[in-house]
Length: 158
Image (cartoon, rainbow, N blue to C red; front, top):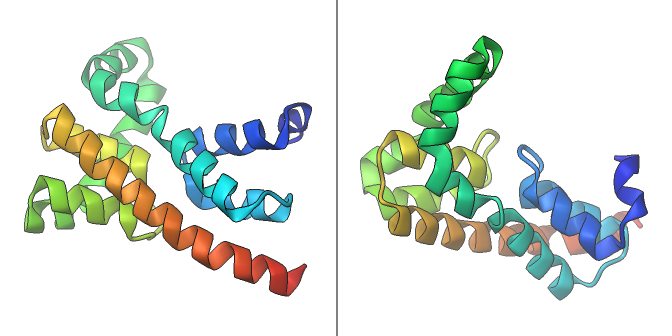
C-alpha cells in the first residue's frame, strides 16, 4: 500500500478503513503501528468504515443489477460475496434484522464486517434505517474491541 504513503497518516487510516476486506479491522492495527493515538485511531477507523456503507446500503440493488449486466466476472464476484453473507447470516435469521446485523458486524469473524452486512441486509430486504443503524452500532462495537486489543499488543511488540 505504498500509494497511501502520499497522504497524511490520518487520511491513510480513513482510506484503509473504507476499503473492502480491510475495513477497520485492518485500519486500527495499522494506525497503531504508525503511531496514531488510540482515540484518534478509533474515530478515524469508524468514520472511514461507515462512509462507504451509506451509499452501499442505499444503492446496492441498482448497483448489482448494473454489474450483472456489465460483466459476468463482476456477477460471479457479487454472487460469491452475497452467498457468503447469506451463509454467515444465521444471526440475522435467528435474532431478527437489527440484532442480527449488529452481531454480524460486531463479532469479528473472518468474512463478516460492514460490507458483507450490507450485502446480507440487501438480500434479506432489511429497510435502510434499520440496516444502517445496526451496521453502524456493530461497527462502533467492533472498533472498540479492536482498539482495546490493538494498542496494548502493539506496545508489547514495539
